[in-house]
Every structure is written in C-alpha cells, then in structure tokens.
Length: 336
Image 1 (cartoon, rainbow, N blue to C red):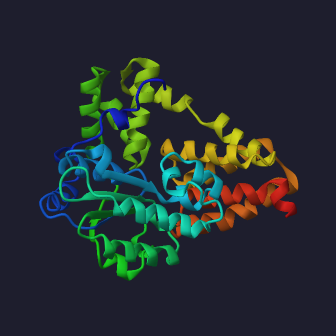
Image 2 (cartoon, rainbow, N blue to C red):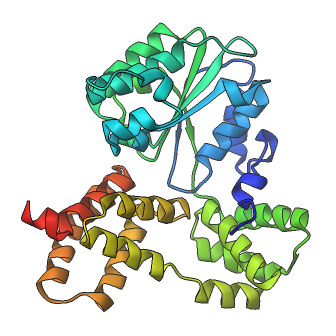
C-alpha cells in the first residue's frame, strides 16, 4: 500500500481506546506519572495505547517520547546498532565496546536527557520479553537513577519474563484481545472517516478474520478498501480470500536457503509487522515449504520447527526464534 497505513493515520487518542479498563488505568497516570508494564497478546493495541498516553501527557511528543524495540538490540549486530541513526550519536567511535555495554549506554544516555516539555519524558521498551536478565538488572538501576525525570513503559506479552524488582516498580496495565464488537466499532469509525462504503457484515467478517488481532483487522480492512473501494461482506471475502503472503513467505525461505540472512530477517520483520503472530507465521512457513521442498530438507525443517514452536509458546521474542529457525535450517546453518 502506498497510502499511509490506517494503523498510523487513525491512531487512537486516550479517550478512544476500545477497552474501558485500559482507558481508566492509563488515565490515572496522566496527572500522576508512574512506570508501567503494558501486557497482552500481539496486535491488541499495547503500543497504540502507550502512544495515546504520551500524546495526552507531553506537549512535545516527538522529543519526549523515546521508543526502543528490544528486538532492535538483541537481533542485530554491533555494526548495525552503530549505524542506526537513532543510536549512532551515542555509539560513535566505540567500535570495541561490547554489545551489552552498547545497549546499556543507549539506555542510560536516553534516560539522562532532560525532558523538552514538562517535568518528565517517557521511554518505551517494546517486546520486553526478549530482555535478558543481566540487561534487566542494568535497566533496574537506570530506572532507579532517573525516576524523577523519566517514566519507563515496558510492553510485553509475558510479564513473568520480567524480574521481580522491575515488576514491583511498575503499575500493570493488562490489555486483552478485543472482542468482535470492539473491533467492529474501531473499524466503523475508521471507514466513516475514510468515507468508505461498507456494511455491517463486511465489518464483522474482517473482525472475525483477524482473530482478536486489532492491528490485523485494521490492515485487512484497508487492503479490502484499496482493492474494492468498499468494505462489504463480498468485497472482504474476495479480497482476503485471495490476498495471501505466499510470495513473501517463499522469499523468506529462499533467502534463508541462499544464506541471505539479513534479507530473510527483513522478510520476517515485514510479515510480523503485518499482523502475524510468531506461531501463525511458523505455520505459514511450513505450509509453503511443503509445496516447495521435500525429503530430508523438509523433514529437518519440521524437526527444527517443533522446538521453535515450543519457544514461541513460552512467550519468547517471535523475531528471534523464527529467524533462528531459518538460520539453523539453511545449508550453512545445518553444516555449522
């Protein structure tokens, strides 16, 4: 899609969040800022809720909201971290620094800057289930040192992965999977704003298709509107039934087979950003592989997938484990 994604163009304000309990808990922190753990399944609106809170509390959101995806740290090389425009000012000239020290420096420097507007700024750590325990201990110390000027918000789908000293310093904000009715209400507001023709059956079909993943529902509605210029039951059925990611999935497998792991990882990132959960993406990769591969190669992929499926079920980072599967399955990985 060349047009802006509806997930960005129609990002909710705090008062518009579909879950009353989430609205109420976050509203309590507007006048009384505190560290938060925002927890829930993928695609249910955790990050959108945090951004809505930041817009409510900061006059200069662009400068006083710092978002760090934990996967950016733990799935990337030191060279990639140094060249990232968000981090290069912190890491310039530090080529011999250990990766752990690089991560700690970025976090400490981000926390030490004075807020541009108001009395505090907000640092968001997304996908925090991927944070190793040693880094969590360092995070705890930074939280203690900068608690007067920095609010820390941790988003995760498994809060039990966080060490008790961090959980005890954060107010929990559970975000459940939205109901079909809640997703339909969100979709209706968006298509009304976009002046797209629709019917209730079309909205309900898209909501059901998304299976509790609000991000997937919004992007599926946009895909239908782009393809059919309406969001009716027939349009949604024809569009979503025909639109698949088989080409992208095959590209990920082909890149892994060729040893092009950077390209394979980007393909995985793109698919996860489109709304796939880790286990769903794993199943889709296996489905495509069964039509393109056979024999020992396919059998080994299935054996590796069994362990990865277990890792994903425990709440570990989707990107890390799906990419690990591709690395191990490739000829280079299998020979290592």
